[in-house]
Amino acid sequence: MASKAHVMQVLKQNLGPLKDLFEDPAVTEVMVNPGGIVYAERAGEMIYIEDAGLAEVHITSAIRALAKSVDESVEANTPKTFISASVENLRIAGALSPASHGGPSLCIRKHQEEGARPNLGELVEKGMLTNAQAELLEQLFVHEKKNVMVGGPTGSGKTTLANALCMRIPPYERVISVEDSIELHPNLKHHVRYLTNATKGVTAQLVVQHTLRARPDRLIVGETRGAETFDLIRAFNSGHDGSLSTVHASSATDMLYAIEMLYQMSLPPDASLSPEAVRGYIARAVHVCVHVTRSVKQGEDGKYYYVRRVNEIVRVNGVENGKYLLESLC
Image (tube, rainbow, N blue to C red; front, side):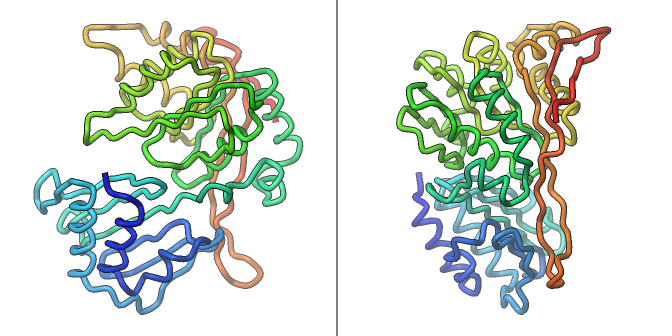
């Protein structure tokens, strides 16, 4: 498996004009669009890189070199026209033309390094949530050990909030996390991190199954999105209280239906459960849903900034007449 240092070297060699962006710790995302148009997020600000100086050949070369560095291959006009890879705290998504219309495109997310992740208090200062919301979530997750799902769109701060909550876990509890790239830095000594690698057969489903044999007090899954959902919900329902995961969804209610869909898709072969049975099982496993949003606002300086907010915290109180019973808490 390639190291972060090697991948960064590949990026700098092939996308030399963007070298400063890759080296800037305040830059968390670099987005290269067809035609060599480049945007980035730096400290919450959306910035446009004028005259980036990238030709199509540079972007294509970078995608091919990145694929090779993680033991993959890419080929236009085939199912391998895309690359999706995670290396340490980097997440890479690239696409060749013509699937990427108008030219190749590339997105590199740089997850924050250890020690750079904000705690709950700092998220309150940044305005992501109120002090009352922070105290409520700490009470529910840390002290009452409720199972929590954090949902929202891509880049909304799901992992940032999840990490801040995990920082409050008592030091005597054994925490096992499952991730495809190194995103969580809860600063806990009694913490074991498992990394998935689907291209090598180390799937999230396989890893989640293994965690149940490794004596976790709490299970943290970076993202619920596939075949691991059945085993994750089973773990949530089997005494591993105070566990947590994230999911892509547009509201707290949609989070539960997204999990429901993933659960049905991840059932063992030949297994079948009615929607009512699945909803009941999920409602017993997931106690609290936290939904976060991301918007763009123009500041007084005329610049555009990403704004991330906790907009829903709901308690799941079961199922009635086939619908989830949700109680808005804050």
